Length: 118
Image (cartoon, rainbow, N blue to C red; front, side, top):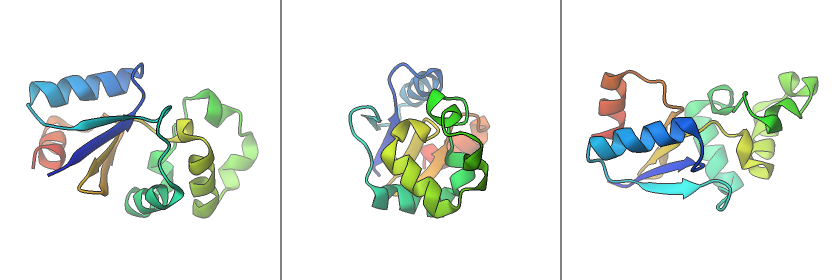
């Protein structure tokens, strides 16, 4: 099993996720979104799996700077925006064996165990 965690090092949710993974002895590769931007094909696959709404980082400056037109964007428009600015992606984003399985770190302990520890 190959688990990748996309995020940024100073993100509070990413730090919590990494601590949880470490304490549960789950191997993972952390990928800094500021250094490595996912391809538009990767993002498209993730959006097709998880949906674009859960993947939006609505608390960041990048999101606020988009203006009200963002509310009317299609899935394809969101994929384009995510590809142009990875800070629009909610973090952390968990990819297991190439497939998106979870975004954010607010799941229950049971959900985290079943998705990340299996």
